[in-house]
Amino acid sequence: MSEQIDLVVSLLLSLLVLIAIALPTGLVPAMIAKKKGRSLALWWMYGTFAIFFAETSLVVWWTYDMPFNNGMALLLPIGLGLIIGPLVHAVQATPAVLTKEQSAPMMFGQLVESSPNRVGDDRLIYFFDTMGIWATLAFLIIATTGILLINANLSTSDEQVTLLAAPPPPPPPPPPAAPAPVQKVVKVEAPTGFVAAKEPPKEIKPPSTAPPVINTGQGVTGGVEGGVPGGVPGGVPGGVPGGLVGATPTDPPPPPPPPEEKKPEPPKIIRKSGGVLSGEAIRRAQPPYPPLAKAARVSGAVVVEITIDEDGNVISARAMSGHPLLKDAAVAAARGWKFRPTLLSGQPVKVIGTITFNFTP
Image (cartoon, rainbow, N blue to C red; front, top):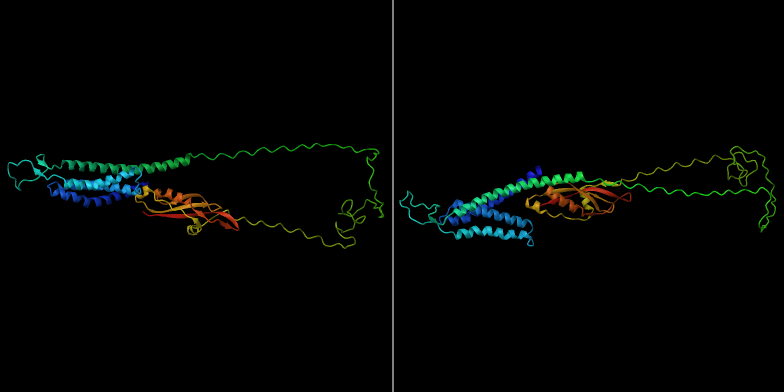
């Protein structure tokens, strides 16, 4: 609510500045009319209202950067006409002259007053002054009420959109696992009797000259069942598989080294200050000055917090502080910035920081 009140106060101060300019300027046609016997107060009020509404039209026209291609261009001739109109009217005004002589002389001679018996009547000027008062009151009421209602509706609509936003749909369930292939087991029966060879052997190995190994049924505790190739019948106490025959037993092999501890992964997102972040920008976008904020003479700084992905692109932005009429333009400009990727331990990471935009009229 305080932001709406600040806008209303800013509007009233702007109107007071326009009135302060219109008061001395409106005195020019009043002095011209006074020399012709017209009412100084009525003509001064008439000139002041005309100059005030002329200033209002020109300020609105100038705020929209002189748009000659739309309906706002009509405000330029209206403003110029309201400035020139009172001056031309005062120059062409008929002098106040009585149409008939008064029967008896008065104390200070014949007074020139506004009456139906004279040429140069100020009743039309009185009508213009009355219409100016009502138009000014209506403008203040409509502008003040509009600022309060529009900002209140914008705040309410933002809250409703936030509350009514549907949650994202849940992810689809994973597809069912494929059934394991069934292996067909074929049972092969071993022959029980003599079976003749289907083909004669191509080569017959000569008999071995090594003495046969006789299994005595005894071995060494801890040995390998059935022995190892090249081993000694009966085993060797203290021997190890793969050792040399006749070698003396040695100490057991050292235990395996402990597993290496995994280094902690670097953080996937870091925070930087506004000055450091601005120095890493490779593309900057300046926000345009909103016409409504320029008309209300709103200025100041807007701080926008942004999130930058691993490639240096702005993926999110939100206004942390600043005037409501300037926040949207600042957020839109922040999304157009581009930064150098930030590396941590040789890996690109996301970055969070702030950008400050200064709006001056």
